[in-house]
Length: 174
Image (cartoon, rainbow, N blue to C red; front, side):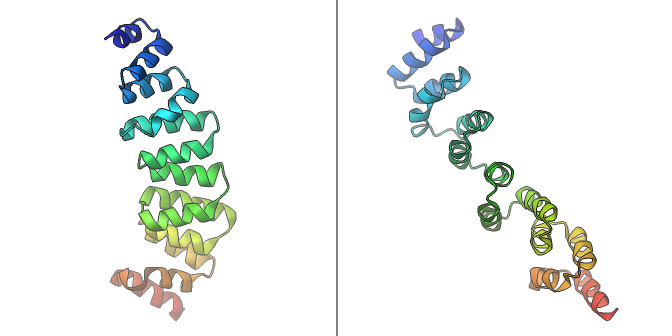
């Protein structure tokens, strides 16, 4: 009750310490994050179950450019799209991002990876991830433009529609 009163009075560091002493770890972590006391929040995050709280902690760690801690927190929050974004935008580790997208099959993350691949001129990667992002028409156009139809055909395998197979056949016909 004292911690709650202190929190209402905006005495956040004191409130957080009292929550912690009262073993209200999630509440203590939330208040520590709110007052940007990440060193005090870090040990409590192992005891926190709330995905929302892990997400808030991850955003805060990302804002201060502590990307490794942000990745760990995003993983705890089950936000793999954010993990992929950090690997691509901040840590320049596309291999890990590719592996995550292949395992999660997230359309949003696949779109991020496809954009990354396009920017780097990795057409086969862009085609693969565009297909995962359910952007088949874009993948086909890219394959046609960059003479990577074999990659496109291999990527759709037995999962393509009749019209996709017809488009591939017409491409090879011409």
